[in-house]
Image (cartoon, rainbow over all chains, first blue to last red):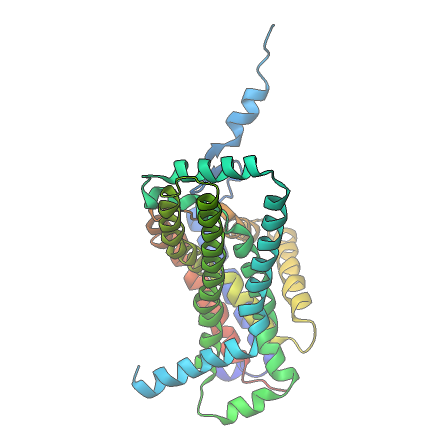
Length: 62
Length: 283
């Protein structure tokens, strides 16, 4: 098996990428990873952009 | 690790710094000089009254303040240095193993009693842990020169500058946070480090094009064949700056000891291992 993986640079690259994708797909499937782009949470500020968008829909009568 | 291996590793780190002085040392120095010149021009454009007001306001703002709380102000101002560090890291990681093969110096290094593992790990440590030290040193010099100028200006204008002492302590207190910010972001981005190193070791030409091209191809194939988005979700999560922007000590432990950090280290290690094995192909 090791000889096949290390036969040349292409087989090694293919193996490394296969393991990489397999780990990520398994991890994504198990954890249900979703990128929550609307949540800003770091040391500088915390914000939920969905609330900011909702506030934009408020009509104000002057 | 015995003394011989440690001294060997330190020699490898010294080699990386000496061969990439432009990225490790001159990049932050040039940026620091640019920032200094721009600040100098802005301050020279002010009137004496405005200068006095600015120095007085700063002295009052920092006077008696807790340096730990105030240090976040100084960390925020180092973001340009962090951007340049990340840019230089991408350049370094993408070319370092490729350059060894291109100029055939790999033949020399493989004749030395130095393993491929030690060589690749030294490159990872050099850019993640050693390079930020030079950036922090430049930032310290910039802050020290700036605050000294404020102190001398304030004294010449007859302003009470005792508060600027607190400002200096806050600036110094921010430096470990800046270093830990750089180190934590490097550990968070270990998958990207491994990806760039893998293609640096693999490609015979244009390693950056290979790195980007293969990624785009994998994203397309995953969506086209399996109709899933696990890979793109992973990349989006990993690329989100929220996960590694740190401006205070409080945010550090949460970032370092988290599941996401752990899985990133695992994935990065897989790719770095691929780069280590790839180094044996020197055709």
